[in-house]
Length: 472
Ligand code: ARG
Image (tube, rainbow, N blue to C red; front, top):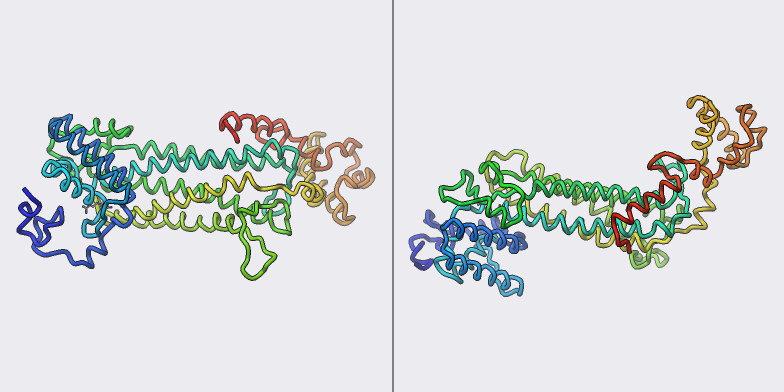
């Protein structure tokens, strides 16, 4: 039977669902409801899903082997037509699922009409999206590893650089530069773990839940799951097509990555100002001003920070989209795609520029070390020195506070106070106090696990190098 014969009575014979309709769809409605303009990027996962579904239909005897072969051949041809730009996308065919099914029927005839047995677009779209999210998670993971490698790759050459570390954007205590780099590695490692964990829940097979109630066709969903590499089969058909938890969860994982890269961007924008002057950004990652000839602006970092806003906005959109929906599928859910596509695209683009930027940054070592005497970065170590000699912490804190006040008034670092000045505040202080003063001694005095003590940092560098080998 031709398309015309099958649905010849309807005004809308082109639509797969046109049978019951006696009026043609308004063009404006087609414009309004279409998703092909953005869901065409799901073509590959849609075809993968259909191949697995067809193979399973063949296993259970719904399709004959020769029918399966025809369908497989047709789907693979469609895939290469899409990839070579020969495929025509038309808004009247709504979405990627309809386009591919229609093209298949055109290619292989009636047998193509059997493909949609035991499934609906509701479970199909969610399966497509799950497959797509899995692939994107892997791509983001790759980008995160590259960024971690960029940080670890500079640890050994920066090992002798001491930086002031901040709380409240006020100088706090000295740390080794690699301690800062590895702080970012830890954050990105948690981001990777979060994605891995999310992926377990993404890999749940919905296909075969059909519209919402399952199907009377004797399908074998565990086979479909196996063919798609899914880890589990969703146990409730109503849950399947209404569930977008996995999209929200992935969107949040991406928000957390964006927040981490935004912290890095903000910190390095500050550090590259003439006021801080800690680092020089690679010129290839800066842009100029059209009016002020002297400017070299940190636009890449600013956009890394700025793009975080849309990644957060996308999560917000998804939360609001799903918050008031009853079971099961509602067309609102078509609106899940652009936000999640955009979040993955944005994060991948951030990671693509962040890794080479991190490798290319140069520390202004001399300037940094010339500034370390300012800010009383060794005050906390001095307090701990007193604690070690038996002074209670609160008392030691008060003593050092007074000493810092004396030093501020004399405009000198703590190491330049005389023994008499020390003893004017605390008479039991010994001459060995000078051994722990100064930023180098303060760093060396650290002992705890995870601290900036040189041996601790070196152990961590080794750990990271092993974990991420090969580090470029
Ligand atoms: N384009 C739709 C979406 O993205 C596919 C599912 C349509 N299902 C339906 N019953 N209208 O959600």
